[in-house]
Image (cartoon, rainbow over all chains, first blue to last red; front, side, top):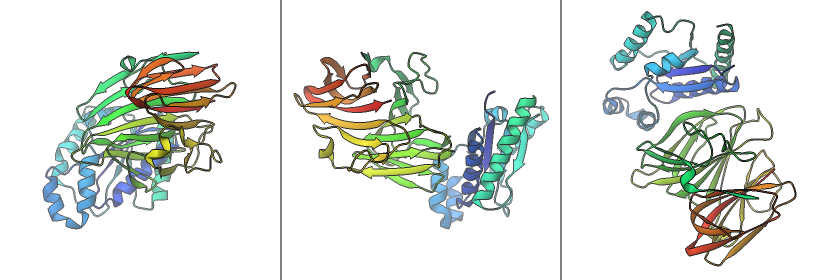
Amino acid sequence: MSQPIVLVIFYSRSGATEKLALAAGVGAVQERALIRLRRLPDLNPQRVIEQFPESREALVRMHKEYVPPAETDLLAADAIIFAMPHDLKTSEDWKPHLDMLTRVRAEGRLEGKLVAALSPGTVEEATAQGRKVAAMAREVKKQN
Amino acid sequence: MIRIRRSEERGHSEHGWLNAHQTFSFGNYQNPEYMGFRVLRVLNDDRIAPGKGFGPHAHRDMEIITYVVEGHVLHRDSTGEQHIVGPNEIQTMSAGSGIIHSEFNASDSDLARVLQIWIEPASEDLKPSYQQIAFAPEEKKGRLRLLAAPEGSSAEPLTIINQDARFFAAEVAPEQRVVHSLAAERHAWIHVVKGHVSLNGQSMKEGDGAGISGERELSVSGTGPGGGEILLFDLP
């Protein structure tokens, strides 16, 4: 049977939530899943850097390293894990991506996929959650 | 038997930011005749544009060696390691039970040329680890410098891999020769990084590779105007 695909979608400014998203991804890999890591983008990266100068280094790096989630990522995934800072307000910048998610869901194309929100915690806890989601995704895939 | 794999027969992909040649099947390049050689699974010659690179992605159960020919790459991984690797350095990452890493050209102005090497580990689910060593350029001139091997293989600094394989690099000037004895039942792969060499009398140029089985002595000499640089893998 083919390996389950786990898509981790996150937002991070300082790099703290990124660390948890990576840990969840590692957990999924430990369970022999394939993973994709996607960061919700800042449509105006420079503005965010100016607004949060203390996170400049992490923001510049993440803007360079990550691509935003695409429709093909959603469709390929057997499970989707969201990782967001718990105190973060929704950003206007994410609207196109959230609209895409809503549309794909309305079209019934998310049916059968597992969706999980990463709860705040330690790196070890995030890894354990990633492992659990991947194990469940494998079970669901087996049944389908 | 020595079977030469010519440079121009390799896989090739051009993505704008990445110009890559694949000796063995990798990604979209799939050739059933070249799925690897013994435990050597991947040998990619990647030219990465300034400031560009591979975003975070995962590996599992693979010994991954990075050999930088030109420029510098910035490595970051989920174990918290962050390092710049350049020529005359070797980076070995043991993916084990799972690791996520990114690799970018560390320069915004210069190209990076990197050989990515994957060796299958002897066992699965190992603890992920990262090693990096530097060596003097002279250490590989006219001799085979051992860079990756199992623990206890050499007194010289090297990176440890979880497989009974040995990875050497050497530069051979014109008429200069290095010799490697291959034990019975052992195999070897030779890859030409730069220039021209002769392997047991057969001419090889940059990008060529050779799969070797049933031979006991390998003799590599530099040819052409500047000789050449090779990688040698002694494999089970």
